[in-house]
Image (cartoon, rainbow, N blue to C red; front, top):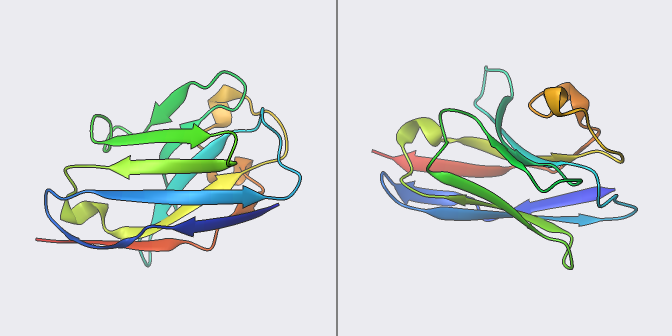
Length: 126
């Protein structure tokens, strides 16, 4: 499985960006799709996920109400719509998935995912 993330860039505080992550290879429609982010020197942080089986979405408290995760099954692509961006949202954003269903209690854990995209930089200027 290969994941190709895109859509990052530089935006002012309050602006919006839309990240995309296209999956190729033997993916499972019941597997979760997730976005994490990482700032240099810090641990990778959960941002949002969508459960492949139920379609239920999950968000970190820090982005709830501002970010929206969605997927296009036909295109095998997951999106992250980011609105009302803040400087603290600046990070490298990674998409992730795995090849089987996930226990929901693990959906926010980075070590539950087997496949990762290359990351896309998001910078929010103040």
